[in-house]
Amino acid sequence: MKHILVLGAGMSSPCLIHHLLEEGARKGWTVTVADLDQRAAEKRVGGHAAGRALAFDVRDLPGRRRMIEQADVVVNLLTPLFQPELAAECVETGTHFVSASYSSPEVRALDREARDKGLLVLTECGLDPGIDHMSAMQMIRRIQGEGGVIRSFWSYGSGVPAPETPANPLKYVITWNPRNVVLAGQKGAQYLEKGRQKIVPGLRMFENTWPVDVPGVGGMEAYPNRDSLLYPELLGLKDLHTMVRATLRHKGFAAVWHQIVRLGLNSEHVSIPGLSGLTFAEVTRMFLPRSMDGCELEQGVANLLGISPTGVQMDTLRWLGLFSDELIGGTGESPADMMVGLLQRKLALEGQTRDMVILQHEMDVEQDGRTHTERATLVVKGDPGGFTAMSRTVGLPAALSVCLLLDGKLEERGALLPITAAIYDPVMAALAEQGIVFQHDRLGA
Figure 1 (cartoon, one colour):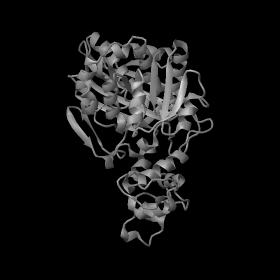
Figure 2 (tube, rainbow, N blue to C red):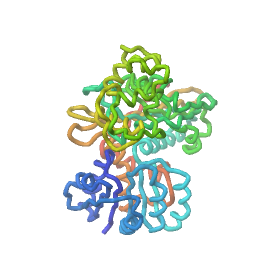
Figure 3 (cartoon, helix red, strand yellow):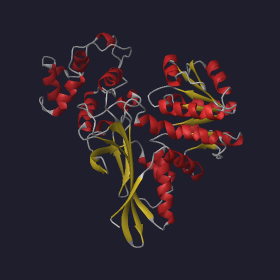
Figure 4 (cartoon, helix red, strand yellow):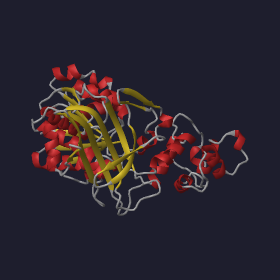
């Protein structure tokens, strides 16, 4: 009997766990869902006959070892901080490892040992990263097989409210780890455009966006995502002059979030003792300079940021509650902790609001002496009362990979990304059976 261990029962896990439980019931597999919050794990399992829920502390090393040793494959949905040590422990114990998180040098260093032991350590197998890599590789293979040369590659990813549903002033909802939302962009980004390296510091990440049209959705705005310079070599695109990976948001989000970054409210490196007993207004005032000590709070913030006190950006900051006398509560001590709790409450996915996931690739191609653009677009919307689009698109690639692995249909071994045909072809075919399919367009031909 095959045994699957899922570590983490957070916002991205419901569809993954559901799929594994259903497959487990059909194939005689068992699924253990382990989380620090046992009630969260129990909620995900829902009493399913093929599953069980356990309390799990990743820092309990003996307990962690016992659980991993009992599994045929571990699915890691915990914070990326723990991924290298979990992957290493899986290789030590002869256990396959699958994750939706980005790889790292520590994980890649496990490649030889994993191969020698006949193990698969598969990372970046979610949405972004994950489906983005796999769909891009299929596109690249087709274009190159037809004799095309790819000169530029713009790749966009997004998780936002669906445009036809009620939206809040920030035009955003929390469908994944809110801490990642708060900390997004802090490390900056770099990309290649027309042969030149471009660097965007974290403080300017949300300042210079550009418009992007998404078929069936309309106009959105984009900002660069992490390090795009890694990808020409990774994807085998030696003839590129432009490589940009970017995040999409509804228009207006970036302008507001830029002001939050400028204030410093997304910082996790500042400690505020007694934070839970302070009000949001008291903490926001801490970020005003001494010269504004006697100034009314909202006017002071507007003056500091150089924005209108009655404009849309200030209205949105006010709606978030940053000037309110409400107690912050919680257990954190940093401004980032404050923002995490605030976003969880103010940007919760509620009622009939549907989330929407977008992936879009645009490649400029030279072929037969002419240039055209190949575009592939994926739009997935959540089901009110059911799975979010984020849960489906993050969870299903990992879940399907686990099923293919246990069925003997993924034979690759080592510490890998899903960028070889032996992995991405069967996973993308399985995703298509679940209704996750790209729309392809050829422009300017």
